[in-house]
Length: 210
Image (cartoon, rainbow, N blue to C red; front, side, top):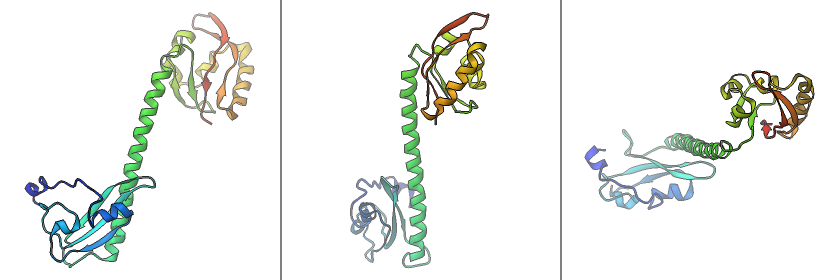
């Protein structure tokens, strides 16, 4: 399509006319339009003539995002059944890309809300995997209470356990192991701050994905 014409074409109603049937029914369709009048297919009047079209909905399991429309097949009067199958597969793949993009945005929004909440909690809270090989998140209070760098815990997920007082470490390790079934760890124990100071108290909110 000539760029000058393309700039004038605006599809405002995806469910309009024959091309919109793919959107409404969530099924691909082949269309024949002998007159070439785009309006008969539900396309804008300023659209170039269309004698044949193949339309497939861009869908996921939950949403219809739009449709892909191919027009005027080169070397043929219309589109074949094989063309329809291929475009249906392509449109489904595009639908999954849209869905994954939506999920990614939802995860980002959830993560932002999570951080807005936990960054203002004045208690130590961090997320680690059950094997203590990866740290997902550490609340800023860790540096104030444990007197250790948050970055160190990201680098060494076992750092918090190594800071537990030697006399409490065995019990804390056992409690943490038992907590794998619930995903939460909340116990009272002593920690050694850099410089040798000891701090005692409950350090709740230590959790890990199951």
